[in-house]
Length: 338
Image (cartoon, rainbow, N blue to C red; front, side):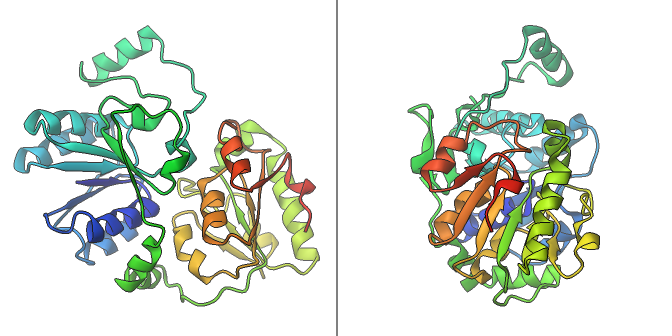
């Protein structure tokens, strides 16, 4: 069973289905926050033998849905990027009661798949209240996702960058040619068709990757002005930029960039960045908030100029990893040289 919350997780799941789990029936569960139209269109692509789209609602409603699924099927693997979601924790808990040999894996979910977050431990009272709400099976999430007691291992793009994993965790690398595999299987072509995109060389000078807008402005009220000023500088200098919102940003262009710069390219968060990578020039400049995409960009296009602006990022623990990969660091977007 694959449980996915973003189009990127879906792409990783399809790749693993084609290369690692091709010899057994596989189910995919789309979380309620997954783009609904993409989930419905993806059903017709026949990569998975069974599909469930979770309805939006209370977590206990999602838990009941998973109880129904586990009541009619037994699983040998569960793979998910959402290891800290209560309904996911419950699903793995119940599935392991049914099959003690079940293996549960974290799907690469960005930079915090590799490093612990800086979140404070849950208070005893809060943990107790959650056990009352969900059940005594509930356990506190671990700051490092792979170390959650209900997770056995992970599939990661950069396993050598993982820091602090317990020795018993089984870590598997995702092949660096995974996009080529998906391209050969026409997965990228089908996804482009779903989004109405034409896969062709994109003549872009600068790619800007933003974090969830609400989180960024909570970190700095100056964030919107700083981003817009930087984009204005790009536009006035004749640079062609592509701005990409975060997959979990449900608002439609919250910064109003397309209206301000109608000749530039703005993509909604739900479009996977991996659709763009093969079509970008090798000398393109990448910048943005702290994101695993910057790490992917540097790996996929080693000659690209990649930088990160810190103004909208509250948790900066991944910075050493980005610096080590050759990503430049500035405090604000206005400091970037173009």
